[in-house]
Length: 257
Image (tube, rainbow, N blue to C red; front, side, top):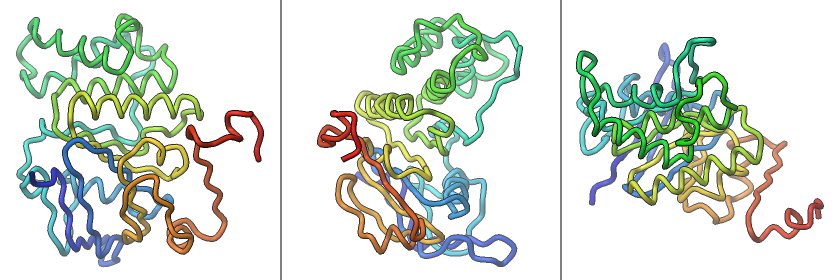
């Protein structure tokens, strides 16, 4: 099966300045790939190229076997870095997720029973069905992120793209959020690509990690140790990484050794 996203020898410029170069990246159906790197390292620019929102000066980019500009937008669910909803606007969680159906049904058509069933299914998948009548602005940051994920899923995409999805969430909310992504991957068999500046928590849940700072310095399976020289190239010399998993005895004992 061909990769859902395949990037080869990509170069991107802003006003003749190279911001991404020599980028090779592959994302397959049924896997979660996380691109990690510092702020300003080119992560969001990479997503814009994949979404067809940014031109590139060199290389090849194929999304579902096509150049980004020819991909049906309904095939890609996207959660931007700063998602928001109007404060004090009376819109429920269910109505927010229902918005994800409109690219499928058209703005001038009313949702039918099947559309509403899909919304219910997506809310259940992200464990937010019990709050479907709640105003979106009354939710916590983690709950809102789940709702926005459900809205993206309601479009029934093949690829889910997330830009810094755990920003503003505490460590517990982050872990719950990533566990939800794993469930989505397993149940929907879609490709999930996200970017993050935090390599710690996310590395426990994803299938592959790519370290990006202008170029990709490392691309491999999660769980394998990333060479120290790579981490220095990507994040600099002052970096501390904390990974929580079942093998972390200190986490279970509640101490730091």
